[in-house]
Length: 417
Image (cartoon, rainbow, N blue to C red; front, top):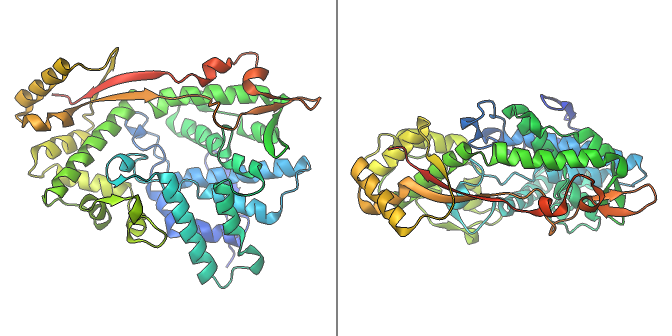
């Protein structure tokens, strides 16, 4: 069987799967699950075209990794074929642990573990399954998945390979800015990913951008800031997410009290049990059930809950399904106790609910984002004389203080009643 495939991507054109191992990883059920999880979660409530999947993002990032490695090789940076494959596998799997609707599950159904930690467990399980059960895997490729995991964890001796996966100018961000901009229609997110990759170099095992690419870096940082506030942190998208969190929290409360709710087996596993970090291990039932969860489990359950006996869950599920989302209002200061009592009284009277359940119908939430973090690897600019400067010092238009500032917006999200 020929495993060297070509995929037609609407953003970058024809993408290649260059070898058998990458194809086998791509075909794994954990990776294929990403075809059933939307990249932008609930952003389609605002931008109807934003229906692309995490699978599409992952193969796009893998393609940019190919391009980036080839650009570095042309600069004289020696990167072996196994290192190239390992880096591509690492970026292909970087989001494999994401649950349905982005970070919603981390706030409701699982406790004390992040999607990054779950990604690592899934990578280790894929490694174990492919190396132990794939007799056709070439001997010289049996350590490649180990290298991929080491690169992902930044434990591989060549730090710049990890920077290509996770840094302030990595192929992950290059892809999602281009891709999310394309599918949402927000043109401000377009970045010159091809030029950025061509301008990459390595100095003392750290990625740098040659001075000719400084304007592309400036555009990249501005685009990232605009995309966060226009798309990722759009008030309506966040309102939908907060509604979904409250909805699942109520379902979890009912499940804990023994109330029988419709839900597919994978969702039932997390809804009716207290699952924490200690339950997640390579080969564990928790990891297996998590790998079966996707967007359809959540949405089909919510549709069924529109006719459930519990009034709170019924109201929240109906509102979510029919896009009657929380109304968002910018606050200048947190709600006072008096404000909360007023809101509670309003919903008790309007919806005829118990006062102890009123908190499901309003929530305060802080939105925050930063364009650039001094704590992470800096974006360094390489001058023709060999000097290296941080982008904040090199740029004539970007102020480091403004770049690293984390603006915050406090919102009240409340049920429409």
